[in-house]
Image 1 (tube, one colour):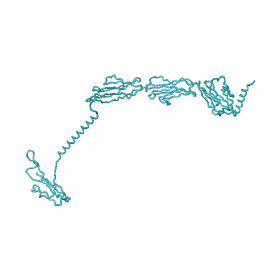
Image 2 (image 1 turned 90 degrees about the horizontal axis):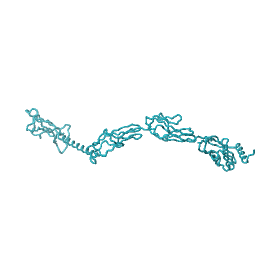
Image 3 (image 1 turned 30 degrees about the vertical axis):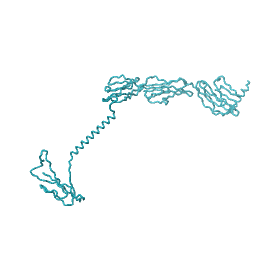
Image 4 (image 1 turned 180 degrees about the vertical axis):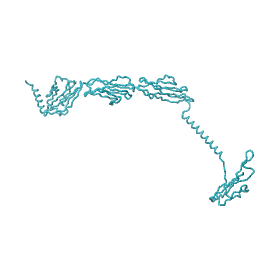
Amino acid sequence: MMFPHGLYWTLLMLYIGQCFSKDLQFQEFNGATGKNVVFAPEDLPYIPSQIIFITWAFGVDNILTFNNGENKVSQDYEGRVNLNTTTAALELKNLRLNDSGSYKLTVITTPQTYTGQTSLKVYETVSDTTLTSLQKSLIENVSSANITCEGSGDITSVEWMKDNNPLTPSNRIIFSSDNRSVLFSPVNRSDSGEYQCTLRNPASSETANLRLIINYGPENVFINGLNEVDLGRLVSLSCSATSVPSASFTWRFNGSDTGVTTNTFTIDKSDITHSGDYICTAYNDVTEKNVSQRHLLVVKEGGVAGGGLSTGAIVGIVIGVLVAVAGICGLIFYFVKTNKMTKVRLSVKGPANKAPHRNPEAEFNYVDISHAPKADGGGVNLGNTNESRTEYAQITHGISGKPRAPPPPYGSQPSNPSSLPEGITYAQMRK
């Protein structure tokens, strides 16, 4: 059999390359059906001007050959391959499952021959990924939820996320053995959020999303508003509650329905008839629960719209009255105390121009104490009036260097008090 000259040369170069070739390094490749892959050697020197011959083969089947500037592609790969004659990289398009296998490259340059081998694994592309839950209305601590991730293609792993954070199992959150579904039993309000399920294989992935809403409440019902207002004032009571979904509200006044179904109850101009009990009831139409809160309102008499004293003015008046009362009480106490005091005047005799000589023993003065007559003209009787006598009480008022004189004898009275010893005063007491 005769071989064409070009083919003969090619076969000769391949034979030489097998005997004296240098190995090229490749990574292993993964591909997805319908996608593309590029086989590129990692360590081929940059020698494009010296490349003489390039060939790629799949198993024993030739894919393409580049020889002396001419590129020939096998009929099975027409329209599916591209060759980079500078890097010797091969692009294989529109992958099929039967493209999985071993691929071989031979590069012949002027000084050297290079050979290398790699493999391709083609996976069916992941598609049609969905995340579903059969339960529609989930109620906290009552319902259980099961969410399932489904998809097509070669699926080698499943990844779960909640609000872009990894979802981890717990005593309430339980994963199935194939990791394709998650059970929440029972559901909690913290389970509300955005869930993501990602189905993967080494060549492709796809993510589905699902939002879970956990219904709860109402709770923490609170009425915000004044407890006391003046006549004629605007009154606004606001009712709030923690609830998913948002609660609806109704108002009752002193046990009667008001017809108000908003969270705010408003009285434009208050009067005495508006005093009483206001009850706000919050209702959740999913959980079918309701919670009420009571508020007592007192409309004060004596105030009119735009009139009446402010709280600050009232406080000032009260303080002023208290201060006045305290002053009056102080004056009364002062006068009572001063009227009960007895004034006693003592006259002191002795040298005026020099200090008296201090004697360890004190001098005595005697004071004449007379009893005033009664209002009817009579006298005050002390003891036995048949015996009239005078007693003296010695009162110390100073110190004298002179010898002390004894007090006058009882029953006598000196006619001239000035004759008494100097520095001593005697008090006459009639009995």
